[in-house]
Image (cartoon, rainbow, N blue to C red; front, top):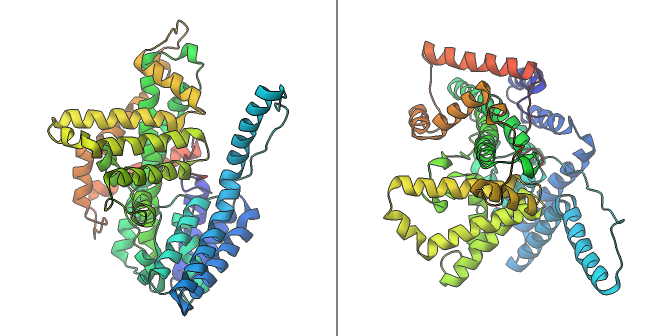
Length: 478
């Protein structure tokens, strides 16, 4: 079940809120509905997430109760291994075996002329949200070990933290210490609920009206044979995808933040107008903030951060972004995407950042957008060869496309309107509008125009979903 669906918006959500309010905001009701939400599509993985909840509850207590630091560390290592094992198996097992098979096949073919083409490895089904709830669990155990938080005594409350449906499938990545107080006593008020409802509608509109609309054109262009991919088409495709991934994931994050406010929790902001960045370093302070800060605090700083030599700092950055790429997907395209972003941050630290600071704002902005869109090709392409050919098409190298379809086939009125709205909302005008709302959109009331605007958005979203419009979700299986 995804947020941008008729079932969720008009059936699951009203039933949940009715039960939640009538039960006087019972966390047991929240947990029950969260498990129903998770089991809606794949109940086979309910035992896995329940087992991980029980295991992490026990690990947290063992770490806290350890009489010696060395014993606590051993329990932490065991806990990390237990949490990572399912993630490695389900998400990376097939990728690792396929890579090894290709390596063995290349050696056997070269030395003995033996072919392994008939050998196939079937993909395992990836449990929904496993990357997110694994990182939730890891941060909890590490924070208990660091004595930043006490271990959670209540198994139910820890289960709510790990499996809470607003952030279960696609984040943001929430640390236990961030919501520990609200976990024990949710902060519920009419003003927060109203603000959350506004934010949910805005996020739903971003996902359905912008991301879904441009996604159709992006997918069609990226699926074109390369002898039909002209330079203008390749740019239209990557611009559409640049808008799609931002409003897909950013819209989902806004929906999660809105739902959190409605049920008494304050989740961290996950996006802060990243396409306004003036460097790639700034981009990663604005894009997927919960993930980048997680890697900073639990990987980069423990490796030494920037407190070590320059060479070691560059190494630490590369490690973090290779892991960041792998976190997004088990494929060499994601490894290359992470490596490219790590390389860009290293180059900025080596001196490019000083050059950028002396450059006009327009130049800095153009550099970031070019770097981001070029690397999005790696993120979107099916393989490295496809990514290389797409990038060549973007710069007009080796392009012969006499049979390329016309641009207007992919730039209908709906797509152009969605792109215009997306560009407006992602830029300074969108930021100015957002700043009026307040830090957490804590507004007590709306004027008539704002209420009418939100109502119109909800009507348009409903019509789109009811009409069975294209409704992909990029981060659904991360």
